[in-house]
Length: 193
Image (cartoon, rainbow, N blue to C red; front, side, top):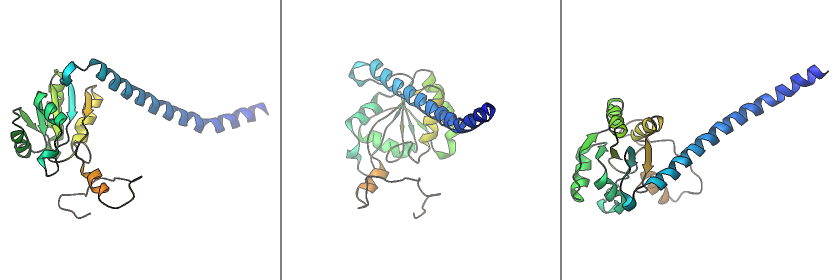
């Protein structure tokens, strides 16, 4: 009888133990992320100068160059180099704000090699501003792979707020915005959604 109780208890508790392990792992990850944010604020130099070994996600204007925030201009000006989805597009933006910085190309078809090049420079102590052609990098964008690579190697990632096609489109859609789901962009270029 006690043997049956022991078996039935372990059968009942087993899913709860697995659920607790998943909860603990998620909580641990959240606490580590919060700790990184706390210490990055404590260690940040006065005047907002970029910290070494940091990847900055810098949103770029969607059509109107005036939409670039002063903080984004400052970050682009102070970063050691800029990783751009298309250096020709980014050069127009930099020229508009008279920013002169070395650029490296980082786009969908060179994420493996380009990502390793950027990571090496970050691990050597440089700061990088990652930009897409328009909007927020790493949202349905090759930048997400760069962010994952940085997180896996302990490189701090700081996202600046700014233009985002998703929220811009949602805000003018007339649809309920209290809760929504984003499932990425179309499978290829030029597809109608």
